[in-house]
Length: 76
Image 1: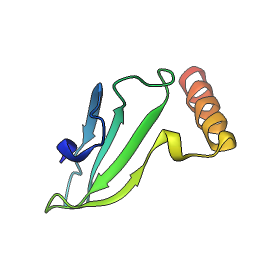
Image 2: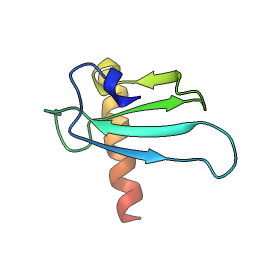
Image 3: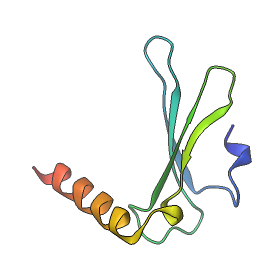
């Protein structure tokens, strides 16, 4: 599962669905750009990655908006 992440990871959080569905994984690279530079992926029941979004692949605007929305949600 996470063994296939290129370069490895520093930490990971797994979210298991209550009934069926996909497992969500949020992880940080070994040397992230900052503490909110999170990557995420989704796997089906057989362990196949069906969606993978890396922080480094996001546009600068998406990186900024992701950081702001996390910040605002944290303190609202």
